[in-house]
Amino acid sequence: MAQSPAHKFGQIIGDTLELALEPLLISVARKHNLYLDRKGIRIARGKKKKVSWKDKYGNVHDLDYVFERDGTPKNIGTPLAFIEIAWRRYTKHSRNKAQEIQGAIMPLKETHCRSCPFIGVVLAGEFTKGSLDQLRSLNFAVLYFPYNTSCKLSRL
Image (cartoon, one colour):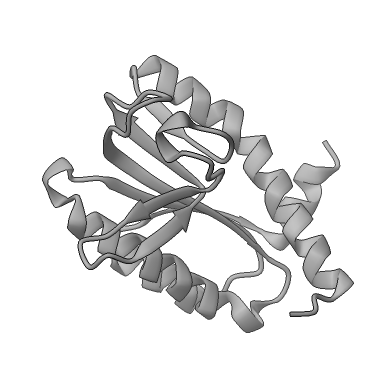
């Protein structure tokens, strides 16, 4: 599938947002003695570098970050939080992105309901009120940086 330069640039912005938040998530994990599952090599995943979790229906979902109790590089722990990060430049696809996040995380929350995992999203750019309300209605914690705020932050 061909990708436009604009799409590739959007991916770079999203990856940069993930990298900017990662030190904060690492700090939270250390403070609470949790394992932060993130992109990269992890013995427990074999050769896969993606953070992938399987729901009770056998579907695999790729995520950005998962906090685990008793997780280690060699062992998958109990998920306590599923966190997704997304960037959108235009509102055109913001509802689709919200539904994509919902479709990945809600079956995992249901699968791991005994550990009552936190579900959260960090969104930046242009998202419609409807897309944000949809996630909040499903009890997602939403941290949202509107486009103008994102631009100001990038100048710091």
